[in-house]
Length: 81
Image 1: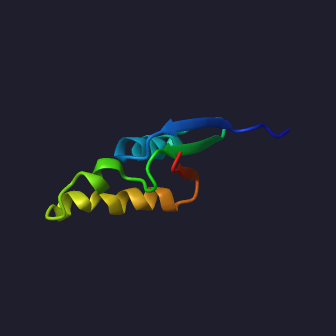
Image 2: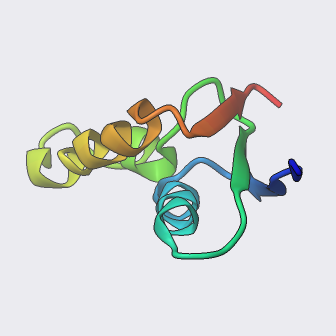
């Protein structure tokens, strides 16, 4: 018997949205979860990308951790919506 995955939509692909998606995929449960991440802007990462000055490399380094979450392939990202 196959069951459809529980579908979750997260609005906003900033750090909070990406970390929420990461936690949902890693949580132990008896059912499968499919996560769609929606972003209004053409790229993810929110204010970490657009609001942090270039001379703050430590803060900008957070993007590397967020990229690893999105590169796993278990979270779908829809941007420009």
